[in-house]
Length: 145
Image (cartoon, rainbow, N blue to C red):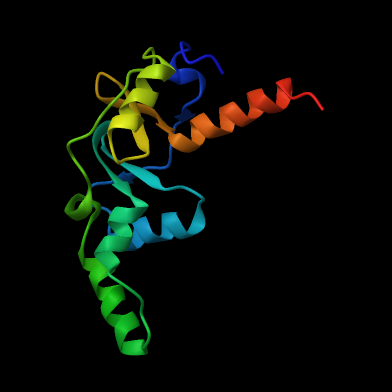
């Protein structure tokens, strides 16, 4: 991986998204079904925010032990929406921004996913996992035993 390549070379295109009015039950189902840690929130293709798995787990606040706990959690998840917990002040990249810019953003901040947008339209997401995966592929190709 060349860190001077554009982020579009390593980003995940067309990520799974939610609408800002989708319930947190939908968000929870996505996190439970897919191996992802960030869900962009869009409205008519425009990026409005992002929900991290940490945001979602913080909202849930713990474990459900009894049937009553499970019922209360289900009500909460059905009555709150993505808009209620999404982060709106986002770092964003454009598809032509270089990978080293993403590395700098990750290094300076506490998040691990950056939406890739053009005219505020979501094109993809680049995560620390995307960088690690591409580094691993490159190092495997060049490994000598």
